[in-house]
Image 1 (cartoon, helix red, strand yellow):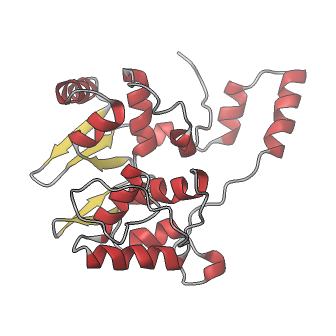
Image 2: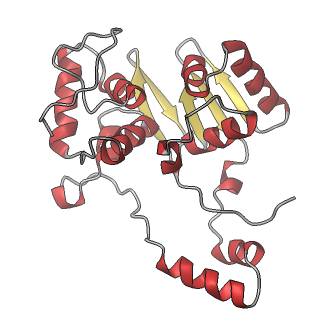
Image 3: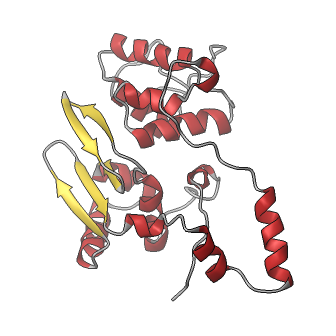
Length: 236
């Protein structure tokens, strides 16, 4: 069995290869680890507040069918296998399904010494790898929204308005790294909130739609349950 771990950033989901073809079981399992919450958050669906804890994710079977390009039966059988082998726990309700990664914290171990000692070789290779690690750009942690534009965190702000955290991450990341390369400012989020209210849908649903369909925002002529083209206007 392999020892140590590697850092796998969630932005790998934006790589052109990640969703380019149907998933296999191993990729689907890694995808679940990437989609799981790293801290507790909540969102509203059909007027009900749903709390999703650390190591959990709330998604529908339809979401996984479309994302992994699997049949509904294959998705169900895969989750049954994961549950049988003790990897996840399923909680299903009439509103949504919540999946808990049983050993999530073990996959998120932060002990740098342990990871370096077990994952690196000794001698010259160790020295070279250590130099490369020092040159890596440090990731800025997500901090709660404080209202200061210079410290504005679009993901935290979206979550504070009721959006699902992973949907917010997907939407903000796609806007920044996708074709249009747009920053998600407070004005952008508030505009989407206004569009959601005007379309008579929740803000959580609006973020989910934009994340899943890779839209910058909801178009002025958007109608729920209808396919629309990406909003690519001059609005930022």
